Each structure stands twice: as C-alpha cells, then as structure tokens.
Image (cartoon, rainbow, N blue to C red; front, side, top):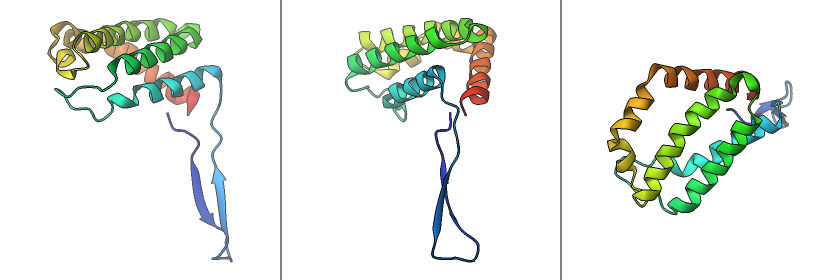
Length: 137
C-alpha cells in the first residue's frame, strides 16, 4: 500500500520557490489496520532464511494483534480470504516462536510450503492484494 506521497515541484517561472504537493490517500479504519499490519511485519523484511528474528515474542504478538484487527475490519466480501491467509500466518508465527525466531524452521516445514503453493491460497492472497490496492492506495 502506498502511503501519503509527496513530491517537490518547482513552480513555473520561479526556480527558487519549491511547492510541496501530497496525494490524498483514502483513510478508513480498515486501511489504517492494513498499514499497522505492514508495520508490524517489518522486522521480517530482509531477514534471510536461516536467520533469527530478534525479540520474536514481541514481534509475533504485534503481528497477531495487527492481523486480528485487519481481519475483523475487513469487509464481508473479502473477510474469508483474510481468515484463510491469517491461518497460515499463525502457523508460521507459532513455528518461529517454537524455534526461537529461526526462519529456517518455517522454510523447512513441508506443510507450510504446500499451503503457500495451494491455488486456493494463492487466489485468496491475490484477491487481498487487489482489494487493498484498489481500496487503500
């Protein structure tokens, strides 16, 4: 989801005056929850397989709380997709906790790999991405 963007533009005829413009982003409790969920998952970004997540208990608690909020605020037409994806996320979080934040435990789990590759899971994930992109950006 793109946040509020800003661009610097110089007004015509005045090379010394800078004008800042911002794009309006639709704000709703649902979109705010999506953004909070993205923020909660940031500690996972850039962590390679076989690396450990520091403060795994705090991170997983934050992700759970954020995902529960997103799912509860999701419009009815997309809520089942959020619930489906959240079930897999929960299994991944539980594995991380049980293995001290070791991401290799998630990568090695054949059930998680199989569920990620499941066409119904893939379709649900795509519908979520499409919905969030069209609603919150």
